[in-house]
Length: 217
Image (cartoon, rainbow, N blue to C red; front, top):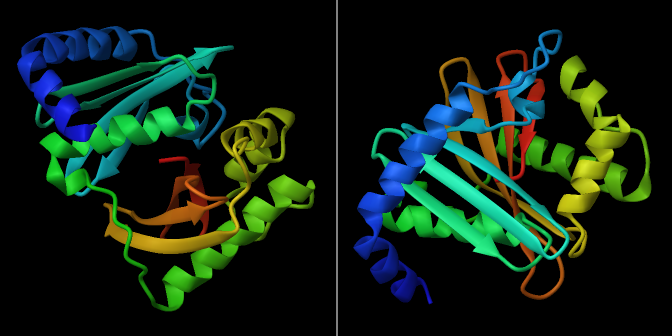
């Protein structure tokens, strides 16, 4: 399947790059943020930017009943991937778009090997408690920044993650990657649920050790 997508996208890459550039221009000029929220990238309705091993990846997704879409753009490589699907939940669509993008940018290939270490285990436990809190409607764990906690404890915040896990809640959480950013660290996790269902999650941790962002890619 991925080989077929590689060939198809390769033949139409110039068109995809043009469309990606156009979309990026439009999104950057129509961005909406919350001026009183320090975690603006966490609750941005237009597009999101995430650092990934030296690359800046812009992405946007959405959908309606019976339809979902995902768009990703690597600025350094001028590479865009757009996936449209006739299913409502966007979590697998995002994963498919990311996997296709990694064919052109191998450094974006998501890791699967379990990593050990004090801090990796610490944040894996925090993510585990977070997932259980969303699933069982319990208080959120300690270690989240105040802006992130305010958002996640809202109806929209909890609803967002319930929607993301609608194919089944994770039963196993493993840290598979760590990346040092300018003033923070990114810990990436593989979340396994029932057969053939898995999720990705990234925790951005600041210099104080607080989680400032939880991203579902």
